[in-house]
Image (cartoon, rainbow, N blue to C red; front, side, top):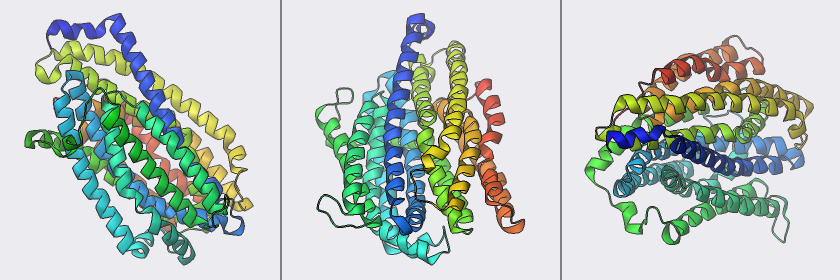
Length: 469
């Protein structure tokens, strides 16, 4: 790309097109996330209507979902690494290398998810006992894990293929397959959990079967789209298993810090659950409900982070940073775009916090909970309504703008310091040394979402995160 072409990035029409594409991507990803997390929320609510067994079943599903969460964080790293490098290639219109990078990601993801499946089937109780020491909760969790473990490989393949499609600004297929998954999951949940439509009443096992069916439908839709409808990549099945050494090296150079960050974060969140899982049963259930509701209320925040990563990477690719473009002119345009993004992130955070705070009691009314558990869940949600403003800013800045600019290593180191150096030690002391109330422990677990903002505001506005890859 020549210097003259780079200069056109700041043209008014180009800027309008950038924000139109960014907004479209944000809304599409947010819509998809609403449905994905909505499936989890429906599982949570339906299981929460099982009467006397409800709280135990919720706790069991939540414990199993910590394994899924770790896999999800790792696969998000694999997928986000795909987005970072492929969006750069997309800006350069280099379709061949997009396919090769996605192939490297898919191979890696399938191997990892296969290992998760094997471990879950061979060692269910030892793994689940990491998160709680309560035998009755583990008994429920084993029922769920024995079925839901088969979703792991399906989930990994779907996430990586969707990451490839997002990198070329094709996110709507994720929305479509999530809609289909919602219908399948909701219908089968109703039929199998409660024994309706001629099916037997299976309780927690029914929820697991519904989730497995939904994951299979998600992957099938992505495969059908790539095979028959995609016009941007023209991907053939053989392309998914064809790469070259140089592209694979570039992919892992970019992706490994992202994968390591996701892995570290997933393990740390599992340890957070383990801390809360050794308190009263009501704490596990309250945390499960609060966390699930928080996820669905934060969809625009997660969407803004992913959209920012894609569009920043594409802008740098269009600016020709990897091919001799003028870095100062590119920096001036990036500065304009990243500045406005930060304002949007803050608005999203405050709006989400207010919505979460004022709706928490109405949402909790859908569950069959003891007064103690309901009160604790409401307090946890109140804490999250404050910390979500920090999440909206620092996460979107760091995992969106900074990571999209190619500086994936910084985000990993920053997460490592805050989570392992501050959050986990302080939470452990609060729980087991000082024996503070659960809500104080919960505040300690979520404090990094506010603390990281100081780092984010400095890092982003120095604009040293634009890296050649």
